Length: 231
Image (tube, rainbow, N blue to C red; front, top):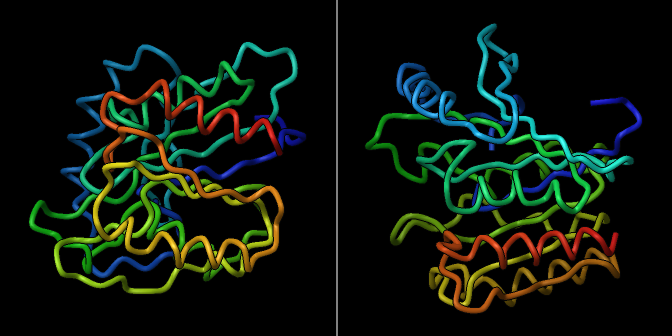
């Protein structure tokens, strides 16, 4: 990616970033198995080995737009238990957004043992919120959260949303049939986004969609792509 290309951070119920502390050690063997399973099946985009803080690598998938002048780059983060070419949500966005003029980078997040719960590592939108709360948003131009507020059954959120601290545009997008917690927190998220004061921020509900936007890839791409076009 050229240095002149602006960076957009797109996060769903989906993150690994080096500054985030994970409460249990990553299962590197399981992470490698996931990578081995998906790399040969990638039809659009190029797999990359990205450096991690411990000296190892993690998988990224970089997909370039055919636009003469790319609008920027979108980082796409998957949800707990999934991967950077996940058929629902991740793969549609990383491929579909190139038609809107964006380059995309989908990255592999830390993988723990199968029995790991929400408190062991907080995934996606939660981890992105942690990063934004700890590091700030100076290096990104916009934030998209998909299905924010979902946790394991009867487990409260570890931290409140930092959305009121964000001065950048924020899109809070969730499904009509999303998890109850996502809907329950929606008024709070909206209030916090409005407190951030950016007029381009928005909260939207995708009709007929569940938490994973199952079989709603086209509608998801359109909603995110159209919102990014307003920035």
